[in-house]
Amino acid sequence: MTEFLDEFKELYEEVKLCYQCGTCAGGCPVFKQYSKFNPRRIMEKMLTGEFNEKLFDEQQIWYCTMCYTCSTRCPQGIDIGHVITELKNLAVKMNNAPPGIIAEMKAILETGSTAAISQSILKKRQTLGLPELPKPDLNEIQKLLEVTGAINQLNKLQEDTS
Amino acid sequence: MKKFAYFAGCTIPYRVPFVETALRKTFPEFGIELMDLPFSCCPDPGGVQGFDSITWHTIAARNLCLAEEENLDIVTACSGCFETLKVVNTNLKSKPDLKKKVNEYLKEIDKEFKGSIEVKHFAEVLYHDIGIDKIAAKVRNPLTGLKLATHSGCHFLKPPEILQMDNPERPVKLDELVEALGAKSVNYLNKLSCCGAGTRNTDQDTAMSVAHEKIVGAELAGADALVTICPTCFVQYDAGQRLMAKQYEKTNLPVFVYPELLGLSMGLDFDEGFKMHTIKVKEFLEKVST
Image 1 (cartoon, rainbow over the protein chains, first blue to last red):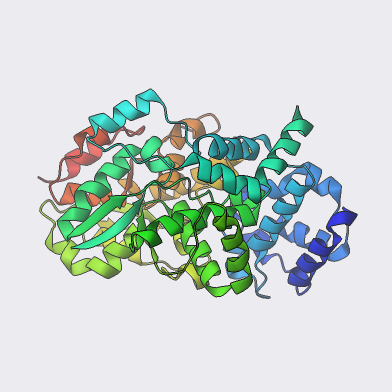
Image 2: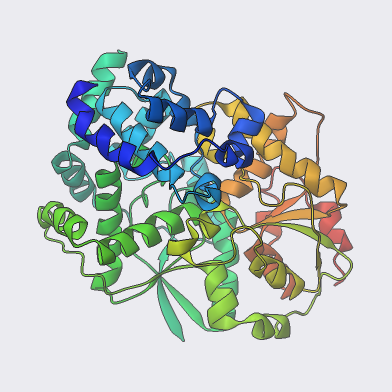
C-alpha cells in the first residue's frame, strides 16, 4: 500500500468533503440487492484511513456498475464513481482484479474485441444481410497496450492467479 | 445526406447483430449514411477503465483518430461505446496534460489525437439531428394502444456534465421518441435503475437481481414491452430473463431496442431479427396494426 500513498492522498482530497449522509448508498442499484457493496462505507474507510489491502482483497469495489447515480446525487459534489474507478486502478496495480476483468483484457489484446467472434455469429450476420466489418489492426492495439504498461500488468496478474 | 463513421463496438455485431440491422435499415431512410472503419473495442467503460484509466483513454483515442482521419463524426448504437468515446474525446480536448501523454503513446503507431470530431449516440441523432416531427411523419404502422416502458440507461445519461443528453433524474427524450411512433410511454417503478450489467463480470446473480426489479416494475405498470437504446441493457433484460428465473418467478416481457420499433412502425421487415430475441415477441407484433 505504501508505494501507492501519493495516489491515495490525491483520492483522499476528492473525498474529504464527504459527510456520510448515505445518499450514494441510497441510490446505488447494487447496494439495494447486495448490501456488502456499500459506497458510503467505502467513503468512510477512505476518510478514516482503514482502507487497506484487505478491502482490495474483498474485491467489493468491483461490484460497482459505473452507473454514476452516486456521483449525480452526492450533495457534496464528490464524483464517487470516479473515486471507485481510481480505487479499481490501484487494486490492479496491487495485483488484484477479478477473473472477468483479466479475461476481458486478454480478449482485447488477442482480438481487439471483448466478444468472441464465432462461426455461428458470422452466419447470423449473413442471414441478416449484414456486411463483414473491417478488422482492427491488432499490431496497433498490442503496441498501445505494451507502451501503456497494460500487457506487463496483465502478465503479473496472470502469474499471480496461476 | 449526412455521413457518419459507424462505431459498431463488440456487443452489437457479435452478440445481437439484429440491432445493427435495425440501424442500417432505418438511418438511410432519414438521409444518413454510415461508413465502417477498422475500429477496435471502444474499450469497455467498466472493465478497461477499471483496469487502467490511461490504457482506456489511449485505446479509445486510437478509435477517435480513425474517424478524425476520415473527417467524420462518430455515431454509435451502444451506450457503453458512447460513454467511452464521448468522455475520452471530451477529456482529451479539455485536459492538455492528458492529451500530451496519450499522444506520446499514439506516436508509437504514427497517430495523433487532434480533437476535430464529435461523438454521437444514435438516439441523439434521431432526436436532435432528425427530429420528432420527421420521425412521426415516417410512421406507416403506428404502435397505437401499446404501452412501452422506456429504459434510457446509465451511459446515455451520466455523467450528465459531459454527455449532456437528457436530465439524468427525469429523462424524457426516449419517451418522446417512443410516443412519436404512436405508442404510450408508461411511468413505472424503478424507471431510472441501472440494468446491472456492469457487475456481471463480478457476480452474475447480483447483476440479474438489479435487472429483475425493472422487469417487475414494467410489468406492474402493464407495459407490453421494454424499450432500450443500448445493446448491453438489451441483453440484460432479454436473455437475462432466463437467468433471472433461477432466482425469481419466470417473466416474459418482450424487449426491444428503439431502432427495431422505429423500423417496425415504418413498415420495414425485421422478421429474421425478431426471431433472434430470447423472449418471444410474436404476441407483441400481432398487436401492431398493419
